Length: 267
Image (cartoon, rainbow, N blue to C red):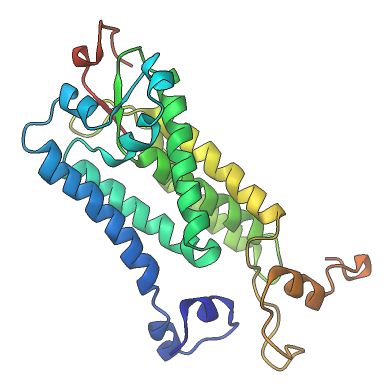
């Protein structure tokens, strides 16, 4: 049975190989985090969610409390307003986290997720009135989306991927981006667009930095038997094999007195 890592690097895979390479590990890891989010909703938030409860559970309160209790920048990522809020954030997380885990590994992907969540929390708290409570993980999910966009666009510039690949990536981005820019949910709950933008910017920057550091695998060139004596094991070998080291080769709400005065802003 092929590992998912081997499948990701191999130029040609049979249908059996692709089925055997299904990324069970990343899927289980993301599902476990989704389970934590849903458990918090079902067992701690309960059937009667309210703003003071969200604060007690670790919601992020905009204003001076962000500096006084910075741990809320992390804990607010695990608090959601209800099952639907947790579910859709979980679906989005699955869509973008699994490909990144396959490309970058668990640790780097988790770091992007948490860094985007923290950056989104800071940005969101600066763009809402003091006392507003922010809850939800979509700022962190937006960072995964940003990293995916950044990495896939940069990879699309490398042969043999056609330019149509970049067009498809931009198309996906244009389909997803409006959901991050909407100011309210379908049910009328206010959405922290600032959190989404902060997370998205963090992910875009992280993807570009990782690409520049050579931490992103490159697409294979050629067919087996066309100079592929062995499968490159890291980025340096890939670049060296392709001759890239040789220049000749080309290579909003109203302010109040406290958090209990405001409905929570979800994201």
